Image 1 (cartoon, chains in turn blue, purple):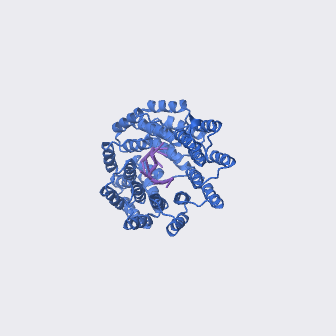
Image 2 (image 1 turned 90 degrees about the vertical axis):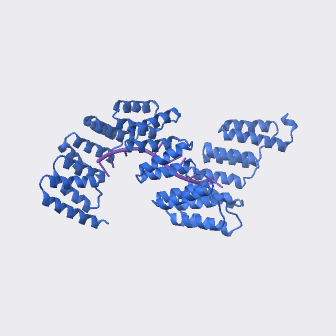
Image 3 (image 1 turned 90 degrees about the horizontal axis):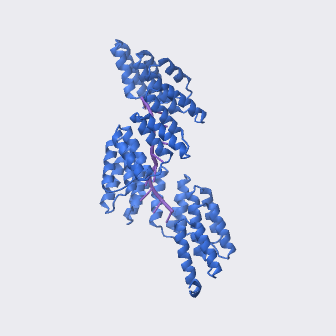
Length: 461
DNA sequence: TTAGGGTTAG
């Protein structure tokens, strides 16, 4: 049957079959088909090899794709612009950015003129390298040369400018493009919204979101998770949860990333019950748990006081052959501290150190705080003094706990040293010192401290 | 070829 078809048509059919195997990531099947084809006299052409090269870039590696390129040349078929575009995009995806640049040069040396697609990919590569000027140079080349920019060209520019901190330029370009008749796509809107959120320009982000709504297009799952994450980041939890319920009511679902974000935010705001429901939903939706999802769930169990369940998950991690990371151990240490099992926490900290996660600041902060909470004030102070690195969490905790232990004068001294050096101390800890001094009869000291606090604030404004 | 990413302490 195959022999009856003309050679060209047969190659076309061969290519269709190869493309479908490549799409299913069954490269050995695709390779087998090429061998069968050759036996039957059906020769692969440039499309066959390009399909295969693109698949190797996606599924295996650029090196593997390069071997296919060699085979292609040996078969007497010259690579074209599509071959190189696949290789350049593949290298950029795998963060082999200098390789992308080399491939672009190689393409020029071979006398293959790059198209808009090649330029787009290379612009993206320069943005990822943190070289916006170079990307902009290519953008100018497109505008001044014979090539026509595509929607992707504009999207890559807007996204890249935002990612490199040029949110203003991204906004200006966006408005200019609109004035020239470019209709922004959902990708354009999402890029800009994300850039504005990251730059904490929430008012403008809201404005672009409104324009998206008025454009006749609809926000998608990426829009929702971007805005939700932005709310959580700025601690507008209620607003974030409103967006979450709107997203759910529209029928959007989560992947592992989305679930972790939502569960962590729910735990942070004490909504343990709802967080547990999301955890169940995540598991029943068949999401493969990785170490970050395990950490999120262990944290949830710890906050519920279900330490045994947390330890069971640790066993599960081990059984599945995954490795615990610094987060896993820190979460466990905090959980043990909160459960007043300070000995267990100290043991786990020592274990963590033997595992090579030594001097983890967050874990140490948890143990110092834990020691105070169980009344081991001297041990807490000894550990605090022995720590080489300290941050605002360390000091806030120590200042606050010293007050709880009635050591207001010491707390006051420490507080003022911190504030003068520009260290941020939670207002609630500052208040604890002032109230403590005043309530125990040291009104004059309290007044003096208040004035010192004010002056220290002026120093760092 | 282009958009979002997740987890810890006061």
